[in-house]
Length: 119
Image (cartoon, rainbow, N blue to C red; front, side, top):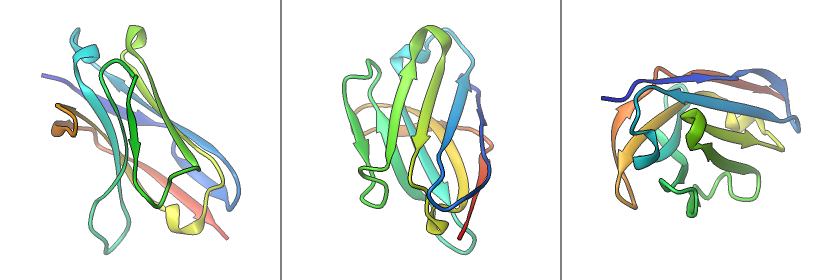
């Protein structure tokens, strides 16, 4: 069982940066592929980024490539999403997820953190 808690969301202006964190419980964090997803009002959940258990592989959704970076600190049971050059269309609730495989099947989800980008 893994519990995930996101933090770092907030209200920013277009062009600003934010760094989201996801803290995981449990001693097996390093075994999981970690991902970030987002969901805007009235839209389906969208894949944002994923990172392999070792951190050696990453993958990004087309809408965030070149602007977002994902990283992890296994010793701290934490995964990060660095978001640069934010746009109003990045406004959404951002969710952290833990899963297995590559591409992953995600079994555990956090409660989400709100990101709002004003124009």
